[in-house]
Amino acid sequence: MSQSSHNRLAELHNLAAHAHNAAAVAHGKGDHLTAHELSRQAHEHSMNALKLSEELAGKAGTSGKS
Image: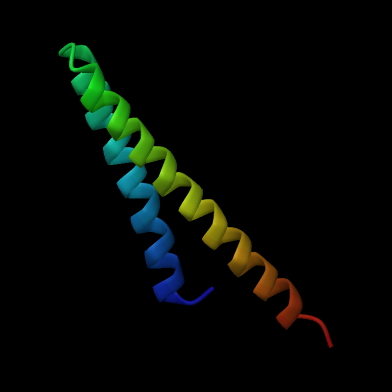
């Protein structure tokens, strides 16, 4: 995996983690609409990270075959 791919994956995971933390804070303050939106964003970032990981794993698997 190239460094830029690794950096992008790390960025997506960090964005998801940040959104999860912000959602927890908003929920704790009783702001359930904001918490729901932040949770949705966290899920979206997590799914994007998963998709990119799977694409990169597929490319790595095919590049190793002769």
